[in-house]
Structure formats: structure tokens, C-alpha cells
Image (tube, rainbow, N blue to C red; front, side, top):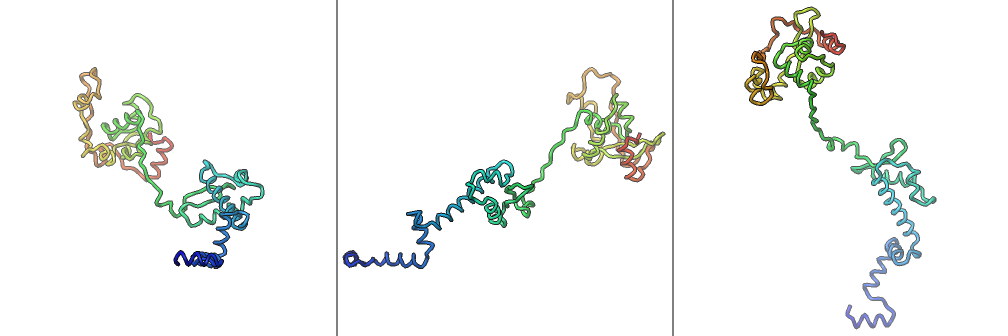
Length: 265
């Protein structure tokens, strides 16, 4: 519409075409006109104002639960609202809104918290290997087993000069570096210990015969320079099968029971 025609229509009290189109659109969408009226004059659109307050209450609830360092109960949440606000209904409504999302609002022990959806747990799992540092006693015991195998617990204690705690051998068995080999042909038939394939893999050895010798340990500074002249390291033998003074293990369950009770000696 040209400007002169718009001016004539305005003088006659007629609305311009665009204004009439906007009015017709508002009449076809009462909610839109109410929203516009509420934006200009809140008193003119009380219905829209009530809806905005409700949305604000939900936003407040969402922020409170998200920022909380621990689950919140309804009473704690209600402190942030007027007494007229139905906090329980807000919690249920927000829970429904998050039902199919990656994060769910759940109630645990009477308190509310956001939690990752249970069906997404598989993609959030992360497996990490935590290195376990061996104690000095465990390292010494491992070295004795490696160089003196097959060796019994009593023989390990005789070499170290101290009693081995039950947990020391348990730790070495759990790492998979030490294994039960058999039983000594001696009174009481004590268990004999030796290294495993896992030991060789971890330390990068082709065979047990590749363990460092006396000269290697001296060069590495692992032996005191004042060691006796007749001191010798035992040569580790390749013992894929039982030695002549070893008996085969009986039922594994019985071995575990005796080892757990300290009856292997």
C-alpha cells in the first residue's frame, strides 16, 4: 500500500493492511495476544503471568538440585519458595520432564538428586589399571622365589632371616607373578613356590635363566661393594616340570584351604 493511500485510510479510521493482518492473527491465536498483552502489561494477562511464575519455579528447582553437593529433601527445597508453592508437585513434574533424558531426577532415601540414566551406564564406564606397589618384604620374597625356586615358605624365611607375614605371599599370588608348584618330599609336605609366565612377561624375560647375574647386579649398583668374596647367586634353573624332590599338587581347593589357614608348612 502506497503512503498516500495509507494516510487517507488512517483519516477515515481504517487500519492499514499489515495492521489488520496482525489483528486477525491475534484473534486466531488468543494465547499469542495474551502473551503480548502480558509482556506489555502484566495485569492484562494474569493467566500468562501465572504460567511464567510456574516455569520460573521449575527453573529454580532445577538449578537448586543441579548445584547441590548432596541430595535434597522437599523440606530443604521448600525454604526457597513461598508457602503457597506446592514443592512436591514441582518435583514430580520435573521428574517427569527428565524421565527420557540422559540425566534423570530420582528420589533416593527420601531425597532428590540428578543421576545419569541407568541405560547409559555402559558408555560412561572407564576401566583403569591401578598399579599396586609391592612392599620391600614382597620384593625380597619375590627375588628369593625367582632365584631359589622351587622354594618353600620356611626356606624363604631362612634366607630372609625374618618370618613372612601371610599377606606377603598372598599379594604375590594375586599379582600372578608367583604360583604354587607342588609339595616338597619332606615331613609335612610343604608347598613349593615358583615364578609364573606372568612374571616373565612383566619383567620382559624370555626365560627364568635370563635373570640378571652377580656381575649384572654389581654394575647396576644393586649389590654392596663389601659383599663376601665367596658370595654367589644361585643359578635359576628352567623348571617347567616338577623337580625330583617335589610332589604334584592335590586338589586345588584343598591347597587353597591349607594355604589360607597357614597349614602349608
